[in-house]
Image 1: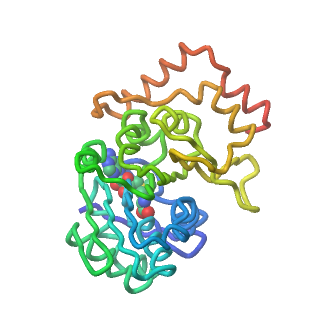
Image 2: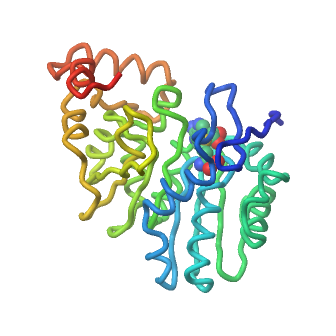
Length: 290
Ligand SMILES: C[S@@+](CC[C@H](N)C(=O)[O-])C[C@H]1O[C@@H](n2cnc3c(N)ncnc32)[C@H](O)[C@@H]1O
């Protein structure tokens, strides 16, 4: 089993750092806060929880924080809401390491029990929850959910960043994930990259931004992206629209759902070199983004 060392984030919750992907699992600003803001809130779970049942899909379950935040929000509003959850994760050692204190203490007791059961058994049913964790490459495991026609009200889309894990940000993978989104559902991701947004559009979604709060980095423009088949969504700014007209908006592709990260990155670079679109550096200069 890999050794996962907890790292403190600025809201007092812990995250891990992946040596393989050379990236932390959460934003430094706060792991728990990220799960609540960019996933639970962005998919309107507090409102949706008034329904008698909800279906959730957690892509890249990791420490399980997006699932945990979702359950906290849903069961605070409506303890009787019946939740069906599917979660996809490559490495079982991550959720298993995340159920040790102090990491897990940020959640309520019932949610802690859920996280423990999911990590230990991968399948867990109690009165108001039916949860299944599918271990393996999400490019393969998502196909099981397409086959059973799973329709999620909310999808939490949380791979490592596009440059580090391009295989999960391709048009081809999004196309399968989008098949699992209910007509009125929402998919949320922390990424506001143009190539990700272009892939979401090509996979059939309308997109909106997750607006910045009052406190943010000077040259940041969004907390992420929400995709849905329906409007309204929070509209993209002019800066974001123009970003989608640059070479940064050339999407990753992986037709066979089996290419390596390196192959996918090389393919995108070739597509960018052949493109007539505006260079991303000129867009950055125009908007004073360093
Ligand atoms: C940014 S972390 C996810 C954080 C997580 N949502 C949380 O709240 O802790 C990305 C996760 O994707 C997993 N992962 C990487 N490649 C994957 C793949 N091909 N299929 C499924 N999961 C993958 C990693 O093991 C890691 O747990």
